[in-house]
Structure formats: C-alpha cells, structure tokens
Amino acid sequence: MRQASQTLTITTDGPGLYEFTRLVGGFLAQNAIASGLLTVYCRHTSCSLLIQENADPDVQADLLTFFRRLAPEGMDWIVHTTEGPDDMPAHIKAALTQTSISIPVIEGRPALGTWQGVYLFEHRRAPHRRQIVLHILGED
Image (tube, rainbow, N blue to C red; front, top):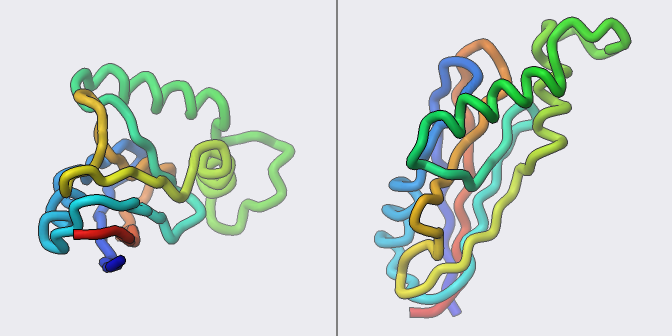
C-alpha cells in the first residue's frame, strides 16, 4: 500500500463552479497508483466540492440560480454578519453540499463518468485562493 498527498490552490473570482478535474488526473499520473481511493478535501467553510456534469454550461448556471434562491443574501434573521452579507449564505450553501469527496481510482485514473467533472463551488463574491487537499491511498 502506498499513499501520497498534494495541496492545490484554486483561484476564484466570485460565485461559480471551477473545474479542476485535469489537476486531479495530473496528481494521479504523477504518483502512479493504479488502484485505490482518492480523497479530495476542501479546507474552507464558505465554498464546497461537487462532482457534476461538465458538458452543458446550463447545468452550472441552474445550480448557481438554485443555491442563490435557496440561501439568498439579505435574510433578516441571520446573526453572523461580521464578514459581509454573502458570508452566512455561503456557509449555508457549503453545509448543504460537501467539503470532502471520495473517488475510486481504477487503472490510474479517477473512476468518473463520461460527463462528470470535479469542481470547487465558490459561494463568496470576493476573489479567493482556495486550498484543496488531494490524498491517494492505493497500490501500483
């Protein structure tokens, strides 16, 4: 059994889905583990991770609209407001999605479906530099 890890930095410029599937594939190729389990972990509380369709950009637009409606800015019952009006809605969106994803690795590649990509889902308006930890455990 072998393992390896790497921290990626993904720069965002506001709400949206930022695909980094190629970076995941590069990490796996660099470490040459043929079979195992990859953990992708987000080190933040106001963004999240998704495995989502990467063929039709309307999917991303609809997800953004859905989450904006689900947790909009300006909810008057919110107490946590010290970091701005978009912060608590971002925490809610992150709580409803995920900060960690496990992906099987088969023949050295992530076992994603044909139309699946790995995304950072940014929930804040301001630009950020987000850290994503990749960890693989497996065999040659």
